[in-house]
Amino acid sequence: MFNKLPTISIIIVTHNGKLFLDECLESLKNLEYPKEKLEIIIVDNASTDGTIEYLSSNFPDILLIKFDKNYGFCKPNNEGAKKAKGEYLVFLNNDTVVTPKWLSELIKGVLDNDRVISCASKMLYYDQKDTINTAGGKITIIGGGFYNGYGDKDSPKYNAEYYTGFGCGAGVLVKRDFFLDIGGFDEDYFASCEEHDLGWKCWLYGYKVLFMPEAVMYHKESGTYGTKSSFQPIKVYLITRNRLYNLIKNFELKNIIKGIIISIAFDIYRISTYIFQMNFKSIYSIIKAYIDFLRNINLFIKKRKLVQMKRVIPDEQLYMLGVIATFKECITEEKRLRKIWKDQFYDLNK
Image 1: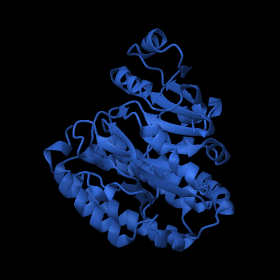
Image 2: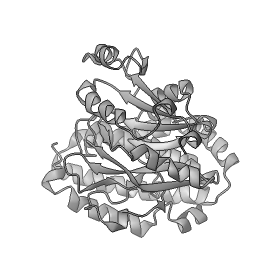
Image 3: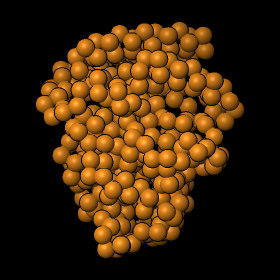
Image 4: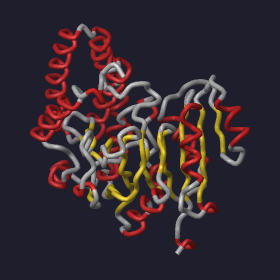
């Protein structure tokens, strides 16, 4: 059986993440997967917390790629993918801890179905191990996405395999050749929404993404950002801008128009909320995101042409498959998330 298993490269991007690395890497040591078929690559974004020295002393067998500055999430993962030897890649956050069977369960989805090219992990919260962080996700009509089960208690409905729009970038598997063929993550994103873009392309090009419920891992959500909240100004900026990039590249024309109208309405609503909260930095982040989106729109129209040339599945079919959420689903999820974020566990100041 082990002879049939493919080689897998696990890529971890870090920036001053020494605090998280020991537990993450120790959990990888305990994987029930043949060591000779496993490669670990760490890409360091110019850490200044002793990460390089720590890795060199304690994990000398790991392939370490060092950058001269912080390039975010996309470019470092792309560089890791180019150097990887594995047939499959797993993009893993440094603020995660995996279970021994995680990888052997994650790979099953692609081995059992040749149209499945990417698999999503079941992520539970590190500090609330009975609570779902993500069990796959759906793409939204404004180009972003929401996580299935976010904030729910783990239950039997999350114990079955199902097709999903995308896998969270904190622990998603994808075939290396496909990833490189599509150009990897879009480096103009820096970070955020690249996971939606990856899953979207899998479906647009005729492949599938599968949620694997036995591929269990634990996530210290947003350890790198330093907050669970999506209301931090830098996250507001990146998510707003990058979902607009996604929208332009991946939707059919009629859904681009609809998506932009809904996006503007949604962001006006958000700005009004931030005014009430006196969160002026996030208001500035939204405005700046739209300005930068418009400034770069010609570039993304060119990228759109390349994506649409390879498309084999229409938007209508993606809606039918549940890959893209309907307007009603998006509204329902937004209301649900607003209630969740009032919970102490999702304190906006954390």
